[in-house]
Image (cartoon, rainbow, N blue to C red; front, side, top):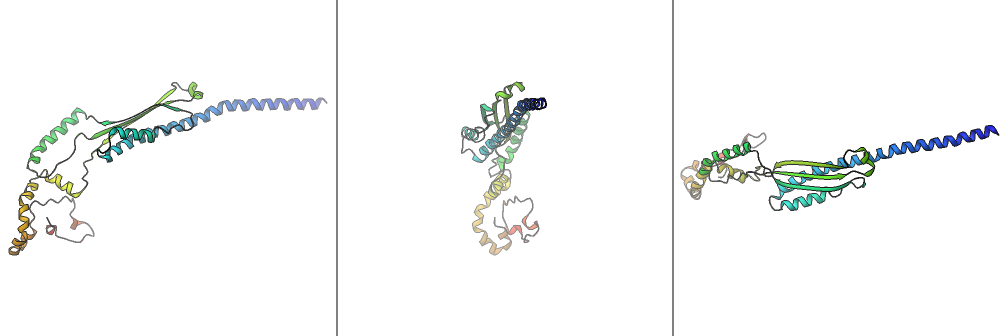
Length: 247
């Protein structure tokens, strides 16, 4: 009987020891697993703030003034910053998105002012529209304040974590939307544009004059070609005389 009681007591002690070890592991492992999940969602929140700044700049760029900055900010906030921390481990206690024009450094502003002053004489003799925008840089900022879960506050110095991102970009990249816009900008800085306007009345009699002088048919006063590489020099293109292109 004694050996049986002895083994029964050992089994009871073994079960108690296993239970204590399991509890100790759980006490250490559960906060660790929750912390990993919280860090994963914290990283997702950081990416959301960056996406919010990019989205705000792109929306403002493509809206071209048709949508106000307040509407863009509200749309970006609802789309990117209102669906974070679905596990409820953390909570967003504050959020902010801003979109405003970027103030240039004084040295950059002076260089830009001097450049446009030097262009004034060329604009005076040109006939096109030199419509390059000034001061078109925009800055978008997004920030959220995250409240950490209670179970992790003992391991963190601050119970609140602030995530912030800021991004600046040119709202008007000076890209010409069409060939006509590019030609107009060139004409706005060259006397060629004025020459083209002065000779426009002659276009009506070009055909009649060409009967007497055939080469006059190819005369195009004030022609502006914006191609860096002429079409007849491109590999595979059909050789053509660019002078025969209509004015």
